[in-house]
Amino acid sequence: MAFDLKNKLVVAVSSRALFDLETENKVFEEKGLDEYYKYQLENENKELDKGTGFRLIENLLKINNYFSKDERQVEVIVLSKNNAATSLRITNAINRYNLEIVRSGWTSGSNISAYLDAFKVDLFLSADDDDVVNALQNGVAAAKILPSHKDVHNSLGDQVRIAFDGDAVLFSEESELIYKRDGLEAFIEHEKNNANNPMEKGPFAKLLLTIASIQEKFKDKKSPIRTALITARSAPAHERVIHTLNAWGVRIDEAFFLGGSEKYEILKAFGADIFFDDQDVHLDLSSSVVPSAKVIHKSLEALKK
View 1: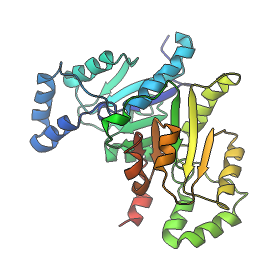
View 2: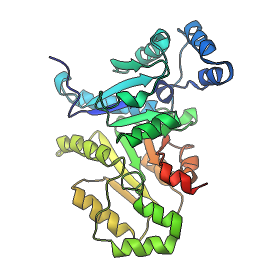
View 3: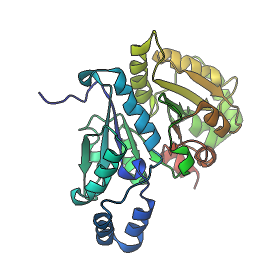
View 4: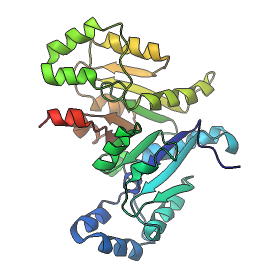
């Protein structure tokens, strides 16, 4: 019987998101594809350092230790634009770090997002803007892994800690568009008038619901996964957030309404294994203390120009 990926938390990660391949990417950008392939083959047995996404993947896979082999909850798939001939270096690194990753896809430069639905992917992490945008447009939670210091790549514990921004991440970008177009006062007025109207689901809402379904299996004991909402909203705009989460029937373990103050110190205290946000102003600082990833919205990016 074929292995069924339904009802699992399926995470697809690019090789550049999982391991530090910035030197290799520079070879590709400066010397082209053939030289890149040659470099990978010549360095097949050279060890790779951890990348920004490593800490999250490592801890997500530890969730499976609570379940039998047939009932494991998390599946991780490496999807890469490398070709199969250069894949052994990545496979060697996976084995070196004892990561239980048995599925992979190697597309030789073609669009990775075309395969996300086939693998039933809930979350896609990549270092490539276009791959992230394509995935989001196809309804998959996706984010661009940002470069970070090696100090933040090592797990702080076995519990997975995932932090989300609110607007344009868990919730739709509707309210954030109002803020960017019309200003803070218009945003606050809109949220007050719609306090009891749940927001539409954003690109990471389904991921949060999937995580919540895993948490439900640990009702009477400590869950191996913990979530936090860290948003620039403040009173009274926070009321709509609470009503929305209640309407979805989903729990968030910790929530912080910061009123525009910096997020990075809260993220460091929370010990996030990953933080998802759509704004560079927050990510520039957060990536210095925790692994961080950008959710890229074309509609919001266009307003910056």
